Image 1 (tube, rainbow, N blue to C red):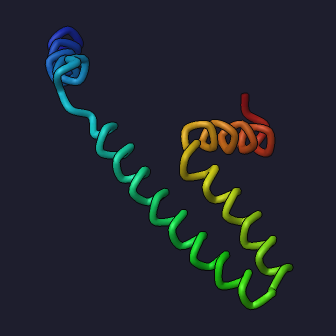
Image 2 (cartoon, rainbow, N blue to C red):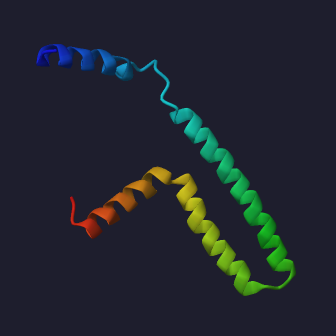
Image 3 (tube, one colour):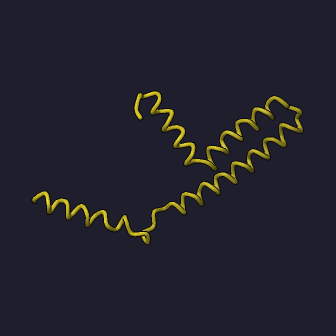
Length: 95
């Protein structure tokens, strides 16, 4: 197989990926993240109510702070990935 034939076969394999009609799964990922986020919020509210009625103020505020952090990770996952990649780049010395 020559280089030209190899390049032509790669183009044939990659061409369907460039088609906008081919599903990528991005909509499904967004749907799953919305469902996971809503379940997380429901759990957060139930636990917060329990801490409030038990008068566990420190645990309530700690739980809310952790909830805000994890909620941000769920709802802003692309930005979180970019921040983590940038942080890793700083640690590893990459660009």
